[in-house]
Length: 344
Length: 221
Image 1 (spheres, rainbow over the protein chains, first blue to last red):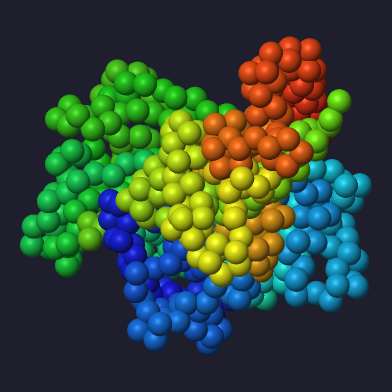
Image 2: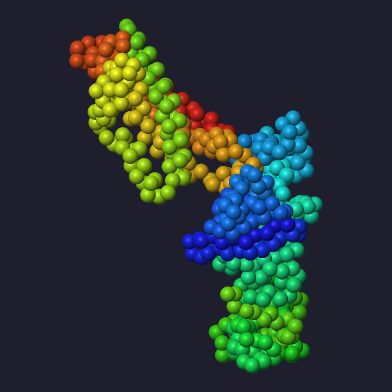
């Protein structure tokens, strides 16, 4: 169990995070520059917060009130970097062994070899990192981190430097690692699909604060805030005006019944929640101004007469597409609406 | 031909290079981490010997270590020892003149060092000393090596400050550069040519070895 409650002044905002992570993996999802990496660095101990407290399995790692700040070497926390951070002047074997301080000297090599084999790197032990592919380097970095037997795993955008295919492969590998690992883990990412695949819990970070922290399935059902909705890839975010027990969506020209709607500033509609028929509870008219074809779906860009904001509607590839530039009816259901609050 | 100047120059250069190596690396390491204002001030002071005329460096050095200098006077009183006009006085002068070369190249190398390597090492439980000697120094090898070679060459060729603190005494303090000057003054051109040739040879060997080292490093990566 990891408990973090720290503040740290950064250049453009103040990092102020407060969260707990149990043995399920937690994803920190946020735009770049929202303080995710800094949070990881503070937990690992390579950066020092201004104040607060960090405990791991009951042990205090940092406590500004008590003046405790364990050096990273004593924390036994694994940190995996986006750029792998392999030691360039050491071979794969030496890199993996460098993390094995905990292991008796005699069996270090065998221990390292076992992990190297586990990650499919046998035959590459005596090669320098510069000669390896990106995927191989990331596997070495994973192997090196796990060889040190860390109590907590931290991943800082682990796959963003890799191409799609490798990303999926390594994602599975990290998924396996997380599954078999019986400690907490935090994965920092800006890719919601990746976060969903790897972690059961997702925390959304905005300008140094965690605004939403919940189970991954319920996050995708109800993202709660505008930023969270954007981060999970919600295409349509429409500002609303709250009135008594209803919301006025002026861009669509409709009114939605909603109790306790005072702090709701926008609604979110995923592109696939909108369909070009009148079967839904809420209907609106618009003309299609563009059709974007992707391998598995078709996205319609809908122009609203009285709003500059385009609406996106995606359909399965094989469905008949309404004609361009004609006024078409669209509809959606209340259950598909995300009611979104301002983040702070 | 008396080879004492060669022997003397080399021993001075080797000792001074070793001194500047450690001093340069450590000051570069700690100054790179220092707060901004302190960094600016220290950086200026430590680079000063590079831009000052060597004679000015020699002048300051004499103020400090000569038998009536700030520190030299105590050494003279307590140990009855004269530091100036000895062969090892040249170690002081060459170290000071060569120091900024080592310091600046090492600092440049440290500043371009990828910090995530440092972080990774720390989270893996490696001690700061281990990270410094086994990760940082090897990774910055090229920059540091360039600094060492520049410092060595500077030590070997130092004339101004050395001639002031060590002077020219044949078989005691003569170095290659002071010998060349002395021979020219005596119009002993033939011997002067020989020493110039030796100087050229040493410089060539130094430069060639640097090039070879760089080539090896490129092949490694």
